[in-house]
Length: 65
Image (spheres, rainbow, N blue to C red):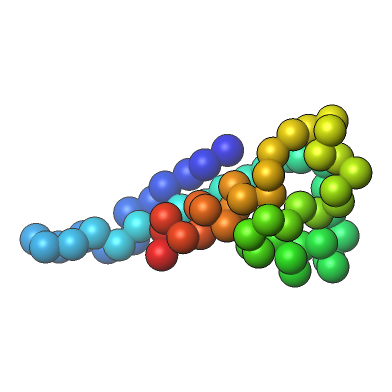
């Protein structure tokens, strides 16, 4: 689920907060530390079953920044 909230608004700008909630397979703390690194997945054994390149969150972070 993705949620967007308007925190501040004036004539020239808007400050937004994006919140992402995922009910995926779950991760341990060590995996979460690597989550925003490009080309990294929490566990490469899932690649065949769940697909993906490990770039989703890294790309999302760059878009937001």
